[in-house]
Length: 259
Image (cartoon, rainbow, N blue to C red; front, side, top):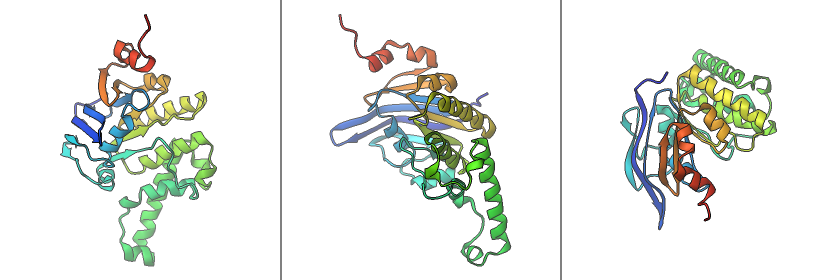
């Protein structure tokens, strides 16, 4: 059950690129442990919203808070430390590194030893490395990837690469996880597995999730609330079944009916 604590609050977010209004007066509130879907046709501005929230873009206007703290103009690496993590529409793994190392590298900023300990391998270095490896293997087991720990990430099947990217994001201990089209390119079986995995990590780690996805079976299977963008403007939000039956949403996806 969701608490009333608001994890992310975005108010009147707008961004323009030259003459293009990519997003206009976007509003969003995500509560602790809530799973929200951000949907809309291609080019609607969904990934642009993700890029604003994660510090890649700075909005032209509007404000947004994470756990009550204003995060506008906060660098991405600082947002990660605060508990905000994401995956990308196009997979961005370190493909020549092992599956295990891909997860370990995401935990680097949590390591509690200094440069000298790292160089001279003092006892606390080994303790921290052992803890990090145990945590990484635990995450991989949750995603059913532990058997591939020593495999190069680029050699994994496509669906497993998608899951590894989520596992790597989870290694940063997020309070809010942003997933950008995690089921893209997956077959129905892989999508079903992914849906179960997302539900599992949400319950196990008590995190909020914001999800961009075109696979409506996945969206309707796990999301509690939907927000729909079209040409950068919110056209509907609320209960998933009500939203997808909203005439404006149907028109945005299918176009106007001809007389």
